[in-house]
Length: 315
Figure (tube, rainbow, N blue to C red):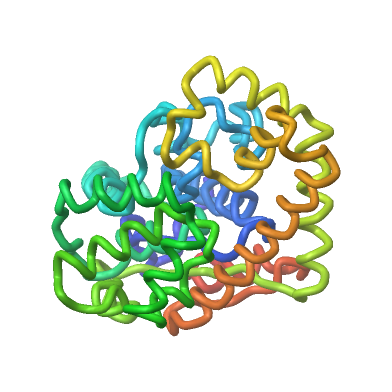
């Protein structure tokens, strides 16, 4: 049986990151399978915050059980659509899980593109506290005035933070305003340090030609509707999707709900989802490009898996 290369640390944390639509899931699978072929067990820890939700499959491009090819996956389907999701909570769950895997001799591979969630685990960072009463007031204001007004408020007190949050993401805007209230400092000052690592790791990033990615994302959105996103959303409605503060606002799901309500035509819902997905991808690229620890590979390069193995000391 082939052996692990001498000097390879089987418990060192691996992370595969990048924007949506770049093939992170497939690369993570290939790395895990390669390790398994060398007799080294590996597990993938999901870091796509919308894939946390049970039943949110088509709109998140979640791998089916068959598509996971027998590789162990953690933190998929661990929340109900009525549950809230926050990076602080993810940190509290993911870090002990990673440490347990390492203690058991299993290689942990983080895979995903949810920026703050990834930073919450990989970087030395502790989250500011909460002010539940003030948060409740902000949530009420969000319902009454909408996300664009809340984003305007944030821009007035912290333009840097506002530039990092899309106006449609009212939940993130509310959290930024809460942190400013709690700490008395700009939200940007509370963001994770993107240089100091929580523990040793190797990060691999996937990127590529911007126009090609835009086209890929547009095709992907159209396929979501063709593959039954509306039916998925109808089913999730029976499980409380509309009551979920996080899940109901996910890109694609919010538009599908608007279509079901007659507020958008199918063409408009798809077009808005394409626009927001492409916008989100630009923000992901901008965020990850600031991290000097990431080793970048071109998702269109047929040799990117071999290059990834070399970066990991497995080539």
